[in-house]
Length: 315
Image 1 (cartoon, rainbow, N blue to C red):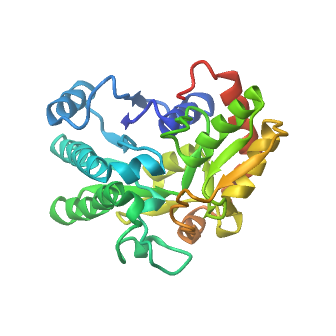
Image 2 (image 1 turned 90 degrees about the vertical axis):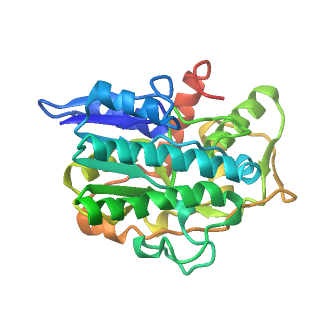
C-alpha cells in the first residue's frame, strides 16, 4: 500500500504523520507520502497529474483545501467555491484515472444545513442550504460526497469521506485573522498575556461546538482508510455531550495559558452558526470503545505546543 496524503503539512496531515511514525501506525510494506503545497498546486490539473505520476499511490487521503477563518470566508465565498471545486475534482479524477484503490476525503461540519433539526447525522447533509457565512466552501465540500457516489455508481470506485467537527491541535494555523476559532483564540490569549492587554473575542461566546483533537482524528482517518467500506461519509466527532460554548473554550484556553487578565466579548461581530451539533452514533456502532482525548487535556497540550513552537507556528 502506497498512501499519498494531500495537505500533508497542515493540521490533520501532521497528526496522521505523527500517528504513522510515532504510534506504530505504519504497517510492514507500507509507504506514506505527505504532500504540501510546495510539492504541487492542486488547483492546477497538470501539477496534480505530475505529482500522482511521480508517487503512483494505491491509496489517497485527501486533506488539501483552500480554507480560512469565518470572516475571510464571508468576504471571499466565490474564491473558496472555485478553488476547492478545482482541487477536489483534480484529485478525485486523477485518482480514478490512475487506478487508485481508495480515496478518503475530509469534509467539514460547515457543510450541514443551516436550518435543520439536531443532532445532525450523515443522511442529512444535503437537506437544505448551508449557512450563508461560508456557503462557497461548504458547497464545494458537499460535492465531494456527490462525486464519491458517482464514481461508485459509474466505475465501482470505493471513494469515501469523513466529516470531522471542529479540529484543533499542533501545527494548526494560529493566525488571529484567518485561523479557526480555537487556534486564533490561543494566539490572541498568548499575545494578551505577553502584552498585558485584555483578550477580545469576536461575537458573544454563545455558539456551541464539538471540538476534536487532531491526533484523535488522525487515528480515526487511518481506521477509515483500512477498515471502513461504505461510500457514504462518516461523522468523526466527539459525542453530543462533549459540545461546549466558545465562552467555555476561551476559559479553558485562559486556564491552559495561565492568563489572568480580562476577557471581552464583542457582540457587534457575527457569531456564525449558533450550533451544528453532530451525532457520532454511526462511528460508535463501528468503534464503541474508541477513547477521545479529554478537551481540557488536549487544549493544554495544544497551548503548550504553541508556546514551545511559537517561532515556527503559523501565525
